[in-house]
Each structure stands twice: as C-alpha cells, then as structure tokens.
Amino acid sequence: MNLPPHIHFIQRGWVSSNSIIVSGGDAPAIVDTGHHEDVAETMRLVGQCINVADLRLIVNTHCHWDHIGANNVIRAASGALTAASQATAHILVHHDRRAMWLDYFAADAAPVTVDITWQDGDMVSVGGYEFEVVATPGHAPDSIALYQPETRLLISADALHEGDCGILNTIVHGDQVLDQAIATVARLQMYDIALALPGHGGLITDVPASLNALAGRLAEFKRHPEQMAMHLLRRVAMTTVLMQQPMHRAALVAYVLARPWPHDYAPRAGFEDPEKLIHHLLDSFIHKGLVVETESQLTSLVPR
Ligand SMILES: [Zn+2]
Image (cartoon, rainbow, N blue to C red; front, top):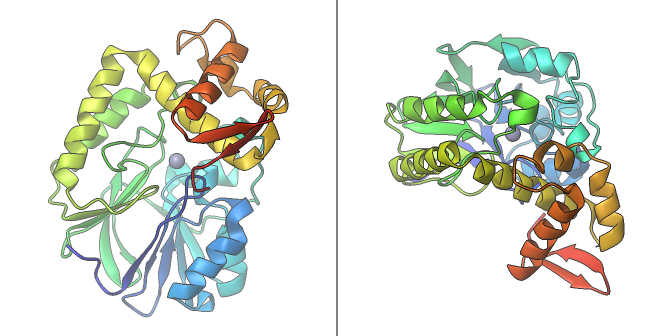
C-alpha cells in the first residue's frame, strides 16, 4: 500500500525521530518533531512538505527527548496547539528529565506546553483524518499510536519499528515495561493494519510479519533479560557516539562513565565493570564496521 497523498512521512537518521505531516483538511498536523539539536534540519524537511505557518496541531506520541525537539519552534512559527496523552502531558509539563531520557545524554530540551490531552480509545481529528488513539505502553509508559481505519494506516511511533521496538528502559520506566510491550504487540495484532509509520526507520509494509518478529524478540528478552539490556546499551551507546563524534576514545569513555546508563545497565548485561562494558560496545561497533577508529579518534558511519 502507498501512502495516501495528504500524508507525508519524513524519515530521519538514527538520532531524531521521524515526523509525519497529515494535511488532508484545513487544520494540518505534524506528529513528532525530532531532537532539539536537529531543529534547523527538521524545519527544512517539514518546509518541503508544507508551509510551517499552516500547521494547526502538533502531536507528540510520547515524552522522549528525540520526539519533541522542534515543538517550540513550530509552535512559534504557526500557533499550532499541542496534543498528547495525559501521561505524556504530565511528564512534559513537569519537565521530568529522567522520564524524557535527557539525563542519559546530558541533553536539554525547551519546555513543552500541551494544550489537548487524549485517552486510549478516543477518536480524534488529525490533519483532516479521523484516528483512533491506541495506548501502546512498553518502550515508554505514556506512548500512543494513531490508527486510521479507512486507510488501515498506523502511526506506530516507537511501539513498532521494523521487526523491533524502541529500547525497553527497565531502570527508568520500571520492570513492567517488557510485559507492557508484549501486551501492546498482542493488541496491535488485533488491528487490520496495511501500513505502519514508525518513529524510527522506514515504512513497514508487512505489518503482521513485523509484529510477529517483534513478538519473537520480546519472548527472547523474557527468557534472556541480558539480551534486552544489550539491546538498550547498543542503541544508547550508538546515539552517544553520533552526538559526540569525532571524539578520542579515552574522552568518550570518560564522558559515558559520567552518564547514568552504563552504571544502570552493566550488571543487567552481565558486566561487573562499566568501563569494560563501554570498550566492549565500541569494539563491537568497530568490528561490525559501524564505527571507525583512526588514531584513537572515533567516528560513526551510521547516518545521524
Ligand atoms: Zn522513544
């Protein structure tokens, strides 16, 4: 299935979330706005799809830092209101740095205002289309997806990537996140979905296969929790390399050791020493050709 003509999918690199523009009516909307360091590029990409001043609604699928970065700039340029789940609104309005994962990356984000709050099961108008709000806890406790019944299209955010989901952060969001993610997959499997628009990565055209693959991965995590910890560590470490590069290995290791995540997750991944864990992660990136090390300077080959 192709995208309907009034829905634009803006696929980004590793760090910023994808953005989706829905412009089927007289109140165009954008779903998720990337990372704040990428605001200029986000505005350029959004401007290729729509006159930013015409946007009337910003939707945030969840509270994480890489989905809210251009909210304020778009709001200032357009007067668009912001909609999110009640749980997302609570986190954003209180600027809960831990829940937003800002502390994991020593990052910042401008304060976000939320004007409209949605609940699971609400039918809402987004850019001229009626969508069902589907609560999708797991990757984030406050996550929502948006399902459009006529086009059988799901804006899945980080609840479903291609055969995967966003990282499961048991330390920040609680040990229940894995069971929540498993229940979310089971719920999404009840929907008739022809196309999914994820928060990271490309369009998902075989949604049942992707959900099955994710269900299998989550079942593995249930049997082997250390794999879930490594899934998180690889992604957080790559994000860190992408944001700090080029950086000398010793400086990068010192930088990472000052963040909470290697200490949070080294024991869960089976490493007693967080420093050994960081070297292991960097070495595995180099071995896979994802990062190059020249004169101890680390640079990632993954698109940022
Ligand atoms: Zn996320």
